[in-house]
Image (cartoon, rainbow, N blue to C red; front, side):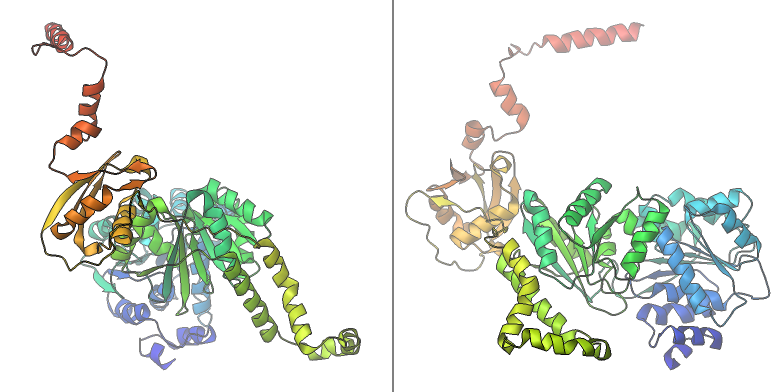
Length: 587
């Protein structure tokens, strides 16, 4: 507690957080709490999800409340109902030994009349979702005239969910506010606009580098065919038998479909999406928080605000469109200083987006092969052994039954007992995964009609490159990554020797070090790709466009169209169009 005391917190709050088991402040708490307590200005705090932001703004907010006043002095805005309820609960727990401080949560889906009565009874801090707060303001139930401090929690999430207009309305209503504290995991242009329009020379506090993910999170991805995604999801879950995780899907429909399939297949799972009623959402979240639900399958919107510290794995059932969304998804694990794993199942078509996420989020991804059936069974077996080893024995309760148990099992040796106990659960997976297919997609390889290509290694880049043409493209199921692998696997061409690769529908151009040109030309001329004979040429050779329509689509259509061509520069359509234009001018 001495370290928290050094931050300037009073005794009542120190007793509250001590009872909650807090011992050492997190980096964001060390930065924000002293600044918020001593500064009357605006604050922008950038920190990853799960790093203790609630305490970072909650503790100073509680300390700065005037307990003799019964009007609203502090307002916390949250993007979702779940986060709103959670933040309000945390503030109440922090203020356990400051009983005169009143906190209430207001959010959609709950009885608004009950919330109005709570506010009228006198509260100093309101934690709210934007939509419900505006409703209460319009009804005259909430007055922000004397509100001093406004906290925007998960500001980037609120903007991603379309609350910009609501935020503008609320910020404009709080005319006498002294300071705005903005907390966000990422600093998008929209978040920057909020700080520019509604904050005055804010103090910017950042832990780590902007937009980077939590260093406690391991990032893994599996590449599969699109049709195998669900089978790969099951393999991944089965290969992590102790998993307590979140599975993110892109849409409500996909969430429902995956949840129904997993329930049918016997997984302890449930879904969270926008079509659920508030009661159903509360029921699902209660089961998940209490650990009675092993897997929660959710959309990004529905999962925003989930703060469960023991989540071991986040599984992305496909990459999100927005890279910042990946930051928020992965941030649901590895919280409160614990280790976590973020797993992404990506199809071959979108694998090339992984390096983009690595670059922007500064997170190193590890590609792993999809687990085989044998590997899944091995993982399950070792989990069974671990469970037996860690099982708590109720000595008093089981004692009366031991004589009968010993008598029943006396013919079995120790080794035989171990085998049978392990086999009880292991046999189920062994039967299911017997003769399980390999789900790892095979890389496309070049087939040589004659002798195999020369696999000698080459020297380092000479700095000079030539541009070549090859008569395969997207219509052959080829991607840039595939082509680079082809050159490396079949000709030992290092990635550093390959420059720009431009793939069109039926052909491609690529830059390569000049020292490799002759070898590639002779080798590729003897090869086929997916049954198609390859041809390689200099990209500057005009013959390629004549032979495969390598120019733009218009030139190809013009050359092979059955329509008559205008002669001597005369085009009747253009003439008719000009005549119509003249008539329009007359009218």
